[in-house]
Length: 314
Ligand SMILES: Nc1nc2c(c(=O)[nH]1)N[C@H]1C(S)=C(S)[C@@H](COP(=O)(O)O)O[C@H]1N2
Ligand SMILES: [Mo]
Image 1 (spheres, rainbow, N blue to C red):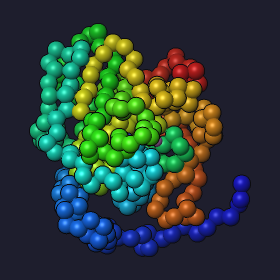
Image 2 (tube, protein in one colour):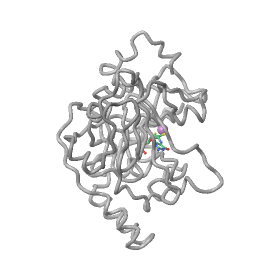
Image 3 (spheres, rainbow, N blue to C red):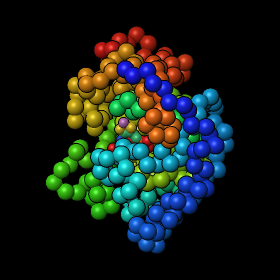
Image 4 (spheres, protein in one colour):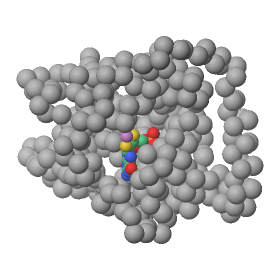
């Protein structure tokens, strides 16, 4: 490994938010005219939230990086595809169906959900299985609150999640090359889903979720690899069987059901011992840092896996 370490870029040189937003506005108008920008602009509604219970003493990743370096294969496999190609996606009106092994199934309107629960700021680390990480200031509410409302039966042991399928609005779902089977699906054990760290996010950086980050509602499970954080959710089902997980189906040798962040379990094709923290300062300004077991959330979640061989149950 080269030992050259470029200087850190001071905060004063990071593009201020107002300038960045104005630049996007101009780009939007140049790229596709008012209609395209209207679609984007309408989404960025301010969102108030109370401070959440978890404090993180690490620099937050700039909004520009969080909203332009994305994985959302429904819009294409390149990191910049979701921000460039999600302008026609319509996150309203939107409902989330919650069903399966529950006594009170229901279909909930997103705007009602956002009124029903006290929205909290939850700034979490996010570690992608590809070896990069960010610190993202999410706004959301505990998944446990929604689960309590539908009253899971005693027989329910897992929670299954499903993303919307809309080839008309999601260009990655059209054409000959389909990188993944749709819908994108994910799952958690019920106790993982009920952990206070697990949230349904509806916003970030003080605004409603941008399309590319999973509007209008996505899962955030900060001690697991990023692909567990399923986006644009339309259905949540309680079940007694371990639910399918898209990347586990696509490549079971490389992606397990649990996928807890673990520096000691390498991906078959690369080490997971370190990660590139995305700071928005460009490739040379970004440092590799050690990856933490459970992404640093061991105090909150290690007890969920007591007695489990973390290496065997990847
Ligand atoms: N429906 C859906 N959800 C998804 C993905 C996807 O391709 N489709 N990508 C996952 C991956 S690999 C990661 S790292 C995170 C990225 O979230 P972000 O773009 O908001 O940072 O979303 C996850 N959720
Ligand atoms: Mo990822």
